[in-house]
Length: 335
Ligand SMILES: NC(=O)c1ccc[n+]([C@@H]2O[C@H](COP(=O)([O-])OP(=O)(O)OC[C@H]3O[C@@H](n4cnc5c(N)ncnc54)[C@H](O)[C@@H]3O)[C@@H](O)[C@H]2O)c1
Image 1 (cartoon, rainbow, N blue to C red):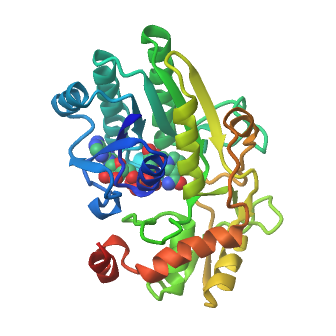
Image 2 (cartoon, rainbow, N blue to C red):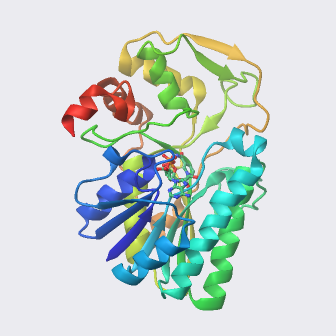
């Protein structure tokens, strides 16, 4: 298929781009590089630097390229920022998505795979979280993702858009070749921040909340390897038909606590990784892990990475060879 990938220069998108071209798809990436990296885009794909909300651009690309499908990763991603500046998130993550959908409708492109989030479930009614757990988003970031899911469902009913909303748990790890990986600024995700301590870029890991109702008192999350997420996208695309909607929780089904992540990082890096215990952060949920039975049953998707230490080791291979991410000299000379 010919696929337009928005946000394909970002962390998850760049791994999906590689998986798509490996699977024989033709890929055009549209990314404004507000957070992405041109060097993260696989050379077999084309990169257009531009904005998803630029309807003249997306319209002319769609008219010229006749895409079969769109994979939509482009979004602002920082939950804390969404609390301080919610309209920025409504504008980019909802407004620009609506503009993209309008162009898709106009050019009769009726397949979309969308990056949704487990944050839709808020404090979940039960764990593991299946897709029918009520959605009670707690942050603007999560409410905005839910708003997009509604826009997709309404488009499905009205003009036959087919879509798969993949509700990711915590993306982690890097490509097997360790040539692309996570490089956010600011970095808010736990595993890269723990590894920055091992690299000497930070003194200690901030551990927010040690008195949760979990076995070791720290929050439990479901870390899903980014290559497994990429594989889920390729499978969702292959299965998707115009006029149908699918929602999948994409996680391993296993939770790991913050202390377990830090211990895994100590074992992988051989660094003591000092910890600074801090009070709970507002909005952090004690336990989030997936029931991924539906995507397994319908798409035959099984995560290859189920061991936390392997996921941390994969991230370490990337961070230790690219301590400054895509700005690293090693990355520059390799490209
Ligand atoms: N990383 C995770 O753990 C996680 C979890 C749940 C959901 N998600 C969702 O997955 C998607 C990808 O996340 P990520 O971690 O790869 O983020 P990222 O910031 O690395 O990638 C997002 C990309 O979108 C681009 N972008 C943003 N707005 C744009 C616009 N208006 N036009 C063109 N390009 C634009 C950025 O430059 C960046 O390359 C996001 O939608 C995010 O909300 C991520």
